[in-house]
Amino acid sequence: MEQATKFLKPEIVAQLANMELRARLVVEGFMTGLHRSPYHGFSVEFTEHRPYMPGDDTKRIDWKALGKTGRYYVKQFEDETNLKSYLLVDASRSMIFSSAHRVSKLDYATTVAAALAHLMIEQRDAVGLAVYDERVRTYLPPRSARLYLKQIFSELDALRGGEATNTAASLNAVAEQIKRRGLVIILSDLLDEPERVMKALKHFRHRGHEVIVMQILDPLERTFAFGADALFRDLETQEEMMTQPWHIQRAYQSAIRSFLKRYERECREANIDYVLLDTQTPFDRALVEYLTKRKRIH
Image (cartoon, rainbow, N blue to C red; front, side, top):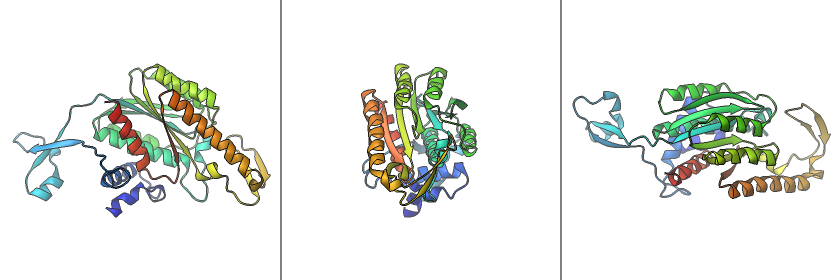
């Protein structure tokens, strides 16, 4: 069990180059650890089994069940839920930031997106992907075919930090593009003007979508614990400034708390689920937030 659940740790998963492998191991680690605290009693059932009958597709045989019982069983999936989910990944330049050799925000976001896509397909749900920076770069409409995962993984594997951030405009563009109601999950640092971003998030609600916002930050962006002299470079404008962070650390921490609380409060008022993550947060937190939401909307 310990071997499986270690893949919930971002620093371990980051060592895996293959996005498909990342997604599978994160989901397997998550499923293995579901009965453990803090998710005791939380369960997910993908399939039920029945004895193999002549004429059944041999691809549906559960070989693990055969190994345990000596009998042939096939996986019988429940009817498709028709839930369509849309994963929106912020690939703007600010997302490439990482501190102290930690996982970058973009790397964390793409791994969460890959694991969620894997989980959704396992549940016979349809999943799509949108990637944006200052505009929408990629849009893959939702599908439930298992082979479709390879295309999603390929897109996520290829992501690199792009241009400047324009979260609000990009989200509005995606909201206009989505035709059928579903579950929209945004993975972003939300380092943009909150007023404009919130209007864009409410755009999804106005069109009947359920929404989860997963705000991803580097731990240092929350603490500003840089120590002595430090050179700061704006990842989007490349402007540089030398300063002594400890002089402004307290004021910064107060400002970032207000910034995050505003998103949390305004999302709650708009009936939008808000989840604050940093790049040290184990991946099970994101997955359980999604599954909890999914249970509520069915």
